[in-house]
Every structure is written in C-alpha cells, then in structure tokens.
Image (cartoon, rainbow, N blue to C red; front, side, top):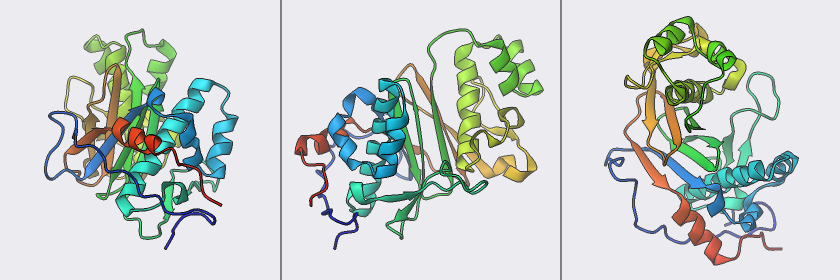
Length: 273
C-alpha cells in the first residue's frame, strides 16, 4: 500500500554503499545519526522529491546558492527518513506549525507516516547541508563555515553572555572559537524549537577549549544537565554541533553523497500519474 501523496507510487530506494561512517565516529550503540552532503552533489532533478510548500519556499529564495542548499537539505532529509520507514520519500508529510505563534516556520516534524518515532533537525551553511536524526529525544543541529576571519564586534557582544565574552577574550579566541560556541548555542535552541526566539546570550555553553556542555539556560528551557551537547566532526572548514534533550549515545556521522548518488542514478524521481 502506498503511503505517498495521491498519484504517487512507492519508490524502492537503492541500497546504500558500504563505505560506512567517517573513521573514528561510529560506535555500535550510536543511535543519533548525522548526515551531511555538499550542495554540488545534489542534482536539480531531486527537486521532484519536494512537496508544494517546500518548492514555494525554495522559489522565494533569491540566490541560486541558497536554492541549492535548500534542495540539498530537504532532498537529504527525505531520503534518509524514507529509508527509516521504507517509505516513498516524496510522500513524507511534515508539519511546520510553530508551537509558540502558530506560524508556518516552526521546527518540522513528520506527520506521515503517523508512526514516526524520532526527531530530526536540519541546518546548512556555505555549500554543506546537515541532518541530525535520533529516537532519544528532541534534537537540534547547527553548522557554520569556520573559515578564518574576524568576528564582528557587535555580533560577538550580542551573541555571548558577559561570562562567555570574558572567557572568549581571556583566551584570545578567534572566529573558529566563536563558531564553536555559536553552533553549540544554536543546536540547543533548535532542539527545543525556539530558534532565535530566545536570545542566544541567555544560553551559556563552553568554548572550543572545553568539552561541549551547557552551562546555563533560561528556566523555561529546563536544567542544563538535561541536555547532551556533542560536536559533530564535519569536513572542513565546517563546524557543527548537536544537542539532544536527554542522554545521547555517540554520533554516527555519514556522508550522504552515496545515498543521493544512488537515487539520482535511478533517473526516476517524479511522481507518477
């Protein structure tokens, strides 16, 4: 029986090659996956996997680079989740209703298949799209381009708490250190579906010289020790962080290029009439 949109047929996805995870990142008990793919590896034909709302959102993006990243992020998301449930990737349905204001910009969740029992988060920067998936609890992921450059003073002071700012300056932190702090903060906020509705300076985290940990939070977000914060090893110059509400097992990090390539090689992505 098809679970896709009306007029679609289920897709049997090719088996993923056995190249395995990034060396040193896989553990047998890992159940929090991080997938990444470069936008250039995602052909335009995979736009057929997106639903009408995603196509509209993509079409509103002005830059070609932004549209490529959007396609990479959501093609990867649909293909990875579809493999979880043996589902037609173009037939997955998402609800993006904001829990706080009712707008269509909230943290997405799967509503078809209805038995979906995991949480996911999507991020992209530069030419890289990243997806985090787990059944452990709410998850957030953030990725940034850590290419060396100066941190704009106003951005630094508006993003870090007074404690973090003092620590950053005492250590002579550069842009790469700032990016580590920023991705850790943003991952926490995305895990709870707050985004920038909570000022990032109100979320205190450790810097790059310390293991990832949440230090302080607004009371509404719960206790700092209720979060697992993990740095995700990604290809340079990108830095990424994952936050899970609950105790997270080690990450399994995978390059999604094989999955994208295998589906693209099939040459049949559009829904059938």
